[in-house]
Length: 435
Image (cartoon, rainbow, N blue to C red; front, side):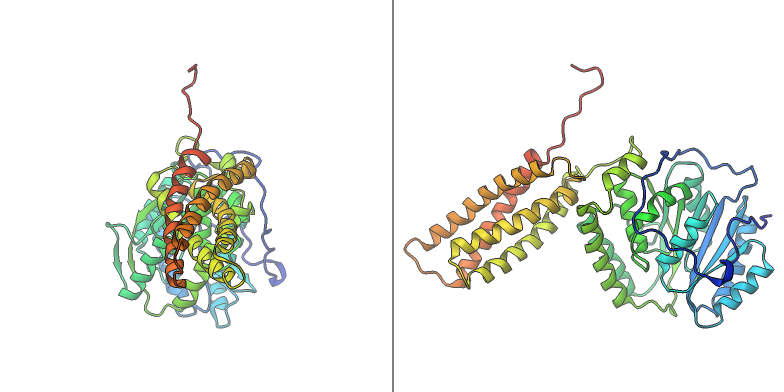
């Protein structure tokens, strides 16, 4: 039977909110070992967080059900941490009552809302070997908890997530939520090259040593926190295990789907920018944490084509907007040159990081120079198309725009080929001892 571990105070002294996590992290001093978690030395093995906000009706039955399940089915020491996100109803009082009654239940109160903030706070403070969280409505069948934790205890994986989108999952929810969930994860795969299938399932776990290394690099305090953590983990070369779950939608959920979707899209843009600018030092994290034997690069052709296509679509739209704007003050050739130059620099930087997985400043100047060479070829193609169009003709603005867009798309295809085989070509690795 699990007992009170003392690993986390029932509540911060004086009712104060736990200290904020630094916005910028540090590289781990020691590379984490993927050895099995010790389970026989009396230490707490698992800490399950339940982030809650105004859940006075759902909290007590959920905690009792989870506590009973863990006592009967989990053979190691555990803790349940109720993370109260500035509730305004009786949630905190109920949590304190449960904490007083059940020795394995803790309470942390935060003065501000945000699931990401709550999880970051309690996970960094936990002394358990594995930290996890689940939604308080317990929409996910608890039978999946064992498979969720097992690959982390064995050292096989670094993070473990439940997925509702596996063919072996059993999901009961409306068509609207199903469509939004699948669309969101499709956007993630197309824009950030994500390989996990379900970013927002409220059923996740992570080894504590990995959590302490990754969490300081996360910035979102709300619902995008899950996605951000998973994207950083994948880019750092960590192994993410997925567990098909049985999941029943909570019809009384207070989540604002539209607002959350908009915030998630903003989060995708921000994390892409943060990885490009180096605020999230992906290469350094990969060197410090990555599993060398299983680190998959961004070199798969299909994945590169998808990401390049998404970036190319945005670049084409930006080019078109700039071209139309410049045509109000310059001739067609000058407008084409300026629009193509600006979008070429941004396009090279985006593809360098997101499509071909090149991080850090090393080689950045050379890559931009090579990108400008590709730009000149694209300029020659589009300028040639404009020259041909205006030879003895006076085309309408619509025809002119259609021609430059078509030429720009051909230039984009040429750019992908040159980027892949020349600018960002991966160096050939020779076997050890080869000459």
